[in-house]
Each structure stands twice: as structure tokens, then as C-alpha cells.
Image 1 (cartoon, rainbow, N blue to C red):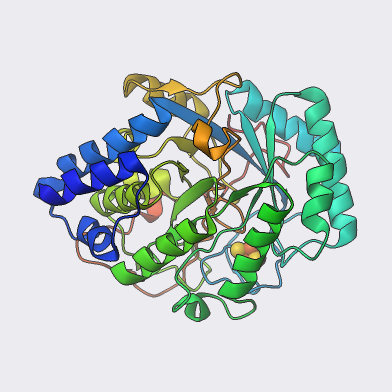
Image 2 (image 1 turned 30 degrees about the horizontal axis):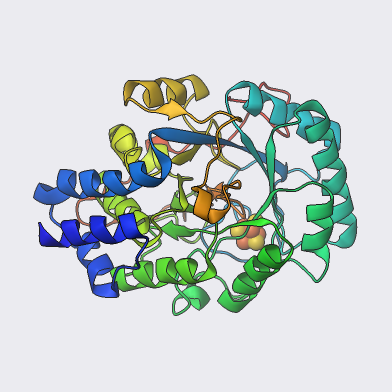
Length: 391
Ligand code: SF4
């Protein structure tokens, strides 16, 4: 297929595909799906070999957010029955992080709900980073605290944060349909602030919110312009109790095409499969590893993932290896630093698709998609509970 040969050549040269080529990937047929995965896999292996980076989410503060992001189970007015708690103490967060590190994670993502941190919150997170690094010297720490004010990114960098996550989520044109309490430009500004402070920028998207192919291409091209080190790709978890609860728009095949498009547009960037991996890719998760080079281990912010042990078995069975702390994530021309990529679609973070559903109404299931509410489990273990975390 000429399209795929062209995209592989461009990906190996780190050359930006055209918008038409990116759209064409999303429009490929199921008959071409394995060819699409194989082509994206060639680009993935060029820059990341067969390594899979594991990341671990710690939800420092859950729920009760004043913002109205419609995909988020922690939003203002959310009726999703998620865990709600205020800031974890540094030692509690460190304990949660240690479980992820013991499970094989090389990055810990510290996420807090809310519009953005106060300076006091940043001090609190600085103490948490200290506590985590005291126990696990080599671990990378990514903070995800919402919109940053002047000076806060620098303070986090001084405190030892390696990266900062703030997702664009969707295209500029549709941003106002998803959230009214802040803008796409606000989000871009925070990614710039993270960059300017010397933090590895992590910024990604949420697919499955009813957006068009053009919207998906727009947001991915917007990300490429911001040049983050990592791009988490979330697949909407339509949580009961949120405005997007009925949006079941994704099939495993569609998820694979979206991941491939992201890989072609951002060939040498850490592409992370984030929230919604188990719900939407389902038994196709191993194929997605041929495209993405990073996943979250264990649970997400407000929903449960598959068992950490199952993640590790899947990686080994698919012929990949978990990236060690002695291995550099990014290719040398990107500085070889730590790619970020929070992947939470259940909230602010890179792994927190906040899903919800309006009770009593039938789901509007897109053609070919299935409303797999049976696969959505609200997180009831780990941070903020007395139960052991999944790692
Ligand atoms: S995504 Fe973040 S800012 Fe938006 S409602 Fe959820 S927790 Fe609040």
C-alpha cells in the first residue's frame, strides 16, 4: 500500500506526514488493519526497539473538582461513585508509588484533581517528590496538577520533578464543547510553561468523545507542534454519572488506527496507551504494543485496570520487554531524557479518562462499537483506601 510505505519512510526520517495522509490512516479498512499495525510497528521499533515503558499513577487528590470537563468522573457535578479524598500525605503517596516501582514501573505520575495548584499545593507536592525519591532514587516523577501559574513549573523542577503532564485532549475547534471552565489556549500555555522550566513535557488526547477524524488529526498535529516528549492516548471511558456516559464510539480496530496515526505524526515520541486500554482495545491490547511503546501499569485515577501481573504477562507473551531504569526511553536526538505521558482518562492525568453516564437512558452506541459497561470498574483499592494497590 503506497500510503503505508510513504508513512514508514517519513516516520524513519522523522518527517511530518500531511493531514491527508493522517486522515487516510483513520479511513483504512479492516482488511488493511494488520498492514497498518505492521507499518506503525516499523517506525516504533526504529526509535524504541521492543521496549515497553511502564508508568504508575498515584491519584494524590481525587474528585471534587470545580472544573466541568465533560469526560471526567471528578468534574463539578459528577454523579460517578468514585473515591473522593483530599491530598494524600507524602508518606502515603510514597507508599503507593513504591508498589508501582516494585511492579516494574520506571515512572510515577502524581496527579491531583483541580483547575491548578496553589503555591501551597506545589510545596506539598515538592515534599511528596522528596519522599518518593528518597525511597526510589532512580524513579522518574511526572506531576500532573492542572493549569500552572508563573513560577510553579520552575518550583516543581527544583523539587526534582522530571516531567509535567497536561493534555490537550481534543481539537481547538471542539474544545468548548467538552469544557467551558478553561480553554484550549490555557492548556497550551501550561505545556509551554513546563517546557520553559526544563521539565519533560507530556501532553496527549482523549479519543471517543464524539469527535470527527479531522478533530483527531487536528489535536495530534497540535501536539506535534508543542513537541512533547510523550503523548498519552486515552480512550474515553464513558463513566456513569458524567455527561459523556452514552458515548460508546470506539472499536478495538478504531483504537489501533488512532494509535497508528499518532505514531506516524509523532514517530520518535513516547506514545503511551492510557486510560481505556482494557475497555476499548480488549483482546487487541497486545497488537497495540506494536505501535505504542508505553503503558500504565495497574489502575487508573478513578477506574481499575487489569491486574499488573496480567500487564507483565501480556508484554512478555507479545515478545516485548519492560524498559529498565538503566535504559533510556527517548532516542538520542531528543536528548534521551524521560518521555512523559500521563495516560489517565478518568481525570486530569494521563490515564484518567473520566467517564460517566446519565442513568436511565440508553447508550448511543456508534456503529460497530459496543457499550461495554461491564468492563468499567470504579477504583476501590490503592491510594485513598485501606486496600493494597494493583501493581
Ligand atoms: S480533567 Fe482535571 S480539571 Fe477537568 S474536571 Fe477532571 S480533574 Fe477537574
